[in-house]
Image (tube, rainbow over all chains, first blue to last red; front, side, top):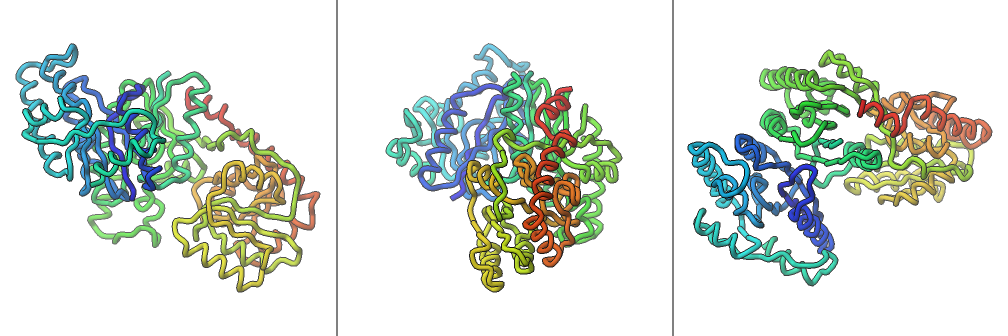
Length: 176
Length: 344
């Protein structure tokens, strides 16, 4: 099966998501699939560019892909008939918009509009996904409270991708 | 400097369009730059072109000091310092409009899309600080259709220093994907016309088995026996180096390609002459008949005759091999030249 991992990346920075996506890609190949990553540039700052970057993801067309595993906002807005979300550490971005973070606080009126716009896009994406998985209990509670979505916790395995034992139950859940 | 290399891709399909990007990255890093590769999806369906163009337009890469854009529609990306290394248009709306490859009707709707695409492409091209192309063919198209100039910057191959010449055996090798438009069938037919014991080796994978099977059947029909080896799989880079080091010459005769093709450049690095045909397109920017290879008529008889000449006139074959290497210098096909131009 051709499995595309779609995740968000910060240009010129190597993040934990990059590392995890690389390990997942390798594990999927070891498990006999074809896999590669689509890394979508995204930044939370400045806030006034968030919406156009959301539209950007929504406007991409995928072809020659059997299954998408999407990690992180706004990568999981990508359109595909067979899409599984694996959302990791997501609440952080919202903290920024809510003004709890140190940067990127938009003007008050705009913040609530932006939050609503993101929430609506998230909910649409959640509805069109086959499964919604999260990396931690805190993320699960966050989505339950803000999006009324009861996700399932799927903790990424520690260690290298070479270990088939570590990854096979994870892959089984991701592709179910 | 922070440099983003931006191109489009179709997931799970590899090809020359990715090589130019992937091979440039380590060269820039070695020169001390921070490099990020950004591949984004693109499908050429007419009705979806402008929606995808918007997506490319919205990408925020302001963190980069400059971006280098390759395959469409990466060229429409917005950046304060955009360099284009333009490798082709969306050809169905350009040079392939009047060809069987267009794939949609010549009607008012598609003519409208064509007109809008040409206008958008031209506007995006004009935003660039510099425009380079991979061949004269592509530069000519930019001039014809968009009225912009593009400097030819021939793409070098990966780690050219590993290629070498260890001698000249009896084998003409063709290292390329086994696809109908690469015309390996012409080489097999040509072998049937040869009068010398010259041999042929085809190395490369195919997108399906139909064409390789046809090649095997054709070779059997002609009774070529062990004079032809058809390897329907990717060879390793080490195997490629060895095959090129030992062979008599290489053959590369695709039908009207845009650029000179990596196989002919790799052959030149190994000091081996190239056998091609006068309808092969960009290959003719590299190969000069009787100097660094043979440019034959695209018929089995003529190609077979050239194969015999490579086999019998060894002194000339070896001299043409040396010329092939010199030709790379003449055309400035090197990574140092690429860096000098892209970073100017």
